[in-house]
Image (cartoon, rainbow, N blue to C red; front, side, top):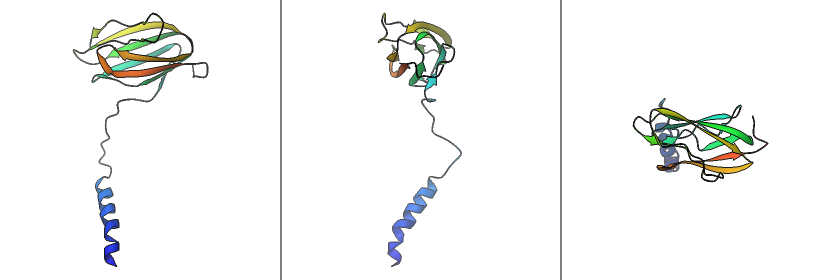
Length: 129
């Protein structure tokens, strides 16, 4: 009869050992960033973007690239946008601007040197300003 409780006790002890240590796992994204006033900032840090999701309204958009990687080359490239606009690869710590005019749709953004630095820019009327 007592052996039936043994699996429950083992699970309870295992879960208790996984309790809050006050430390959280590092996050690779901050959620979807919404462009405000036609501007959005994309941060490159530790060879990854701070988000893989951008939202904007149709029309002019300025993407500010904040490269925080000391000695790391990064850029932002929108290969799905007509003309394939991109900033130049630039050594960090640096900032750059990419100004584009966008129609509604979904567009990929990527760093040309780091294929893992990839995300989607969604442009639509329903997105907040």
